[in-house]
Image 1 (cartoon, rainbow, N blue to C red):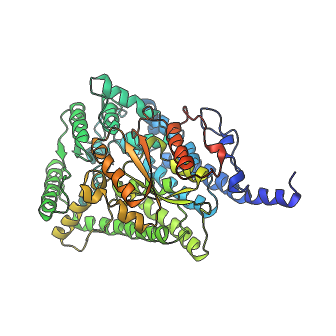
Image 2: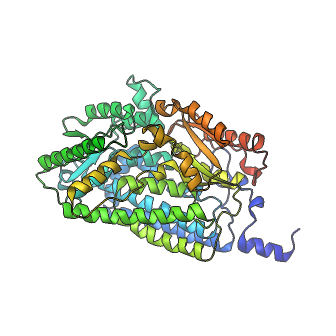
Length: 534
């Protein structure tokens, strides 16, 4: 029996890390909690009021703000992915924020809030323009919207930001659903294979195809921009999508396979010029380069703050953002492009970051190893780094995809200079530069390990990615030659049926026991069944 003073401390501060037993909170198979995690009085109240209640309220407010409950209800009835993604959002928060305390809880939660808001903005814009739920009408919103592949950086559309809306086709129906509810996307993978497509290409491409096979994609725009990023599988998915898109005008904006060549960059800039001409021809609207420059300047502000965050993460223990919040937010805002919600979020996080540095707050005091995660992550288990810290003290400092787009873009009024920078930015898209961008970029890992003071690599092993599978042995040779601890994490991007989350955890556990000779911080997290969890 603990003495009254010790009980009072546990009530106010929560149990120490080694006594939390988070795994005992789970209901078998579901991953849901039997009861809430007690984080201490202040953090528990913060979570209940500022995360649970606040975000449920804001989700409703966002629905009304961006289109209304009737539009949302029609969309949820028509599109399978919408209800299955919207309803379990706060469980997504729970997984990603599990075990966090103090400033880390606050900073990471604001990133989740921004992604939720941006997601609602996008799907409500889709639904308001959607021909399918608006009586077959091609309304004004439909006429003034551009659809594009989720891998096309929306910055190429900045010259029309004051007149045209842009919405990535698969970012919400595919990419977000993987993280929020890992069951939903499986239906689309199966649908792609049901029409005779082989099951061995990238499951990301299969899922994107399946959305169209099942007619689960809103018809919200008259023109479409596609891309070959990150591989030939994306080209194949575009071909199949084009069948279902019917006679919509389509522009293919390629991303080159060869990097670091001025001639290639000039060619890429010409491709963007051709895209601008396509949009002008289709819409009758001329590009406004003053608007483009203003958008780029705002985007550069986001990048400069990103560098501030990286500097703190690399050179101190005072970085308050956990690995999953950092990675998802970075990918989301840098790929989607400029939006006011990113600036609002950065302003809040900046205050928290400055407080942590000023007061020397170590949000992850149980860090045993500073980890960098490399290659393409398992989308159905993006919160693995939350689990890894709670269980083993593995602190994911940086993810490969977070390091894409590591540049500012000139916005000084010289369109030619701006175009060259935009071309380079376009080339440095997620998965393109460091996954299939040549050995120099793939092996940037060693420089970033040193930059962020990491002593361990979590090496993502996407089993159906032919490109990264081809360099598996080269990485193994380098890890041995450099005496680097690296854990290979096999997965299949959105398809949890190939390698389950439980299997991933077992691989990490085995490495930590047998190679590192370490004991878990929280043994209750070693083994549990979450096979039916969202």
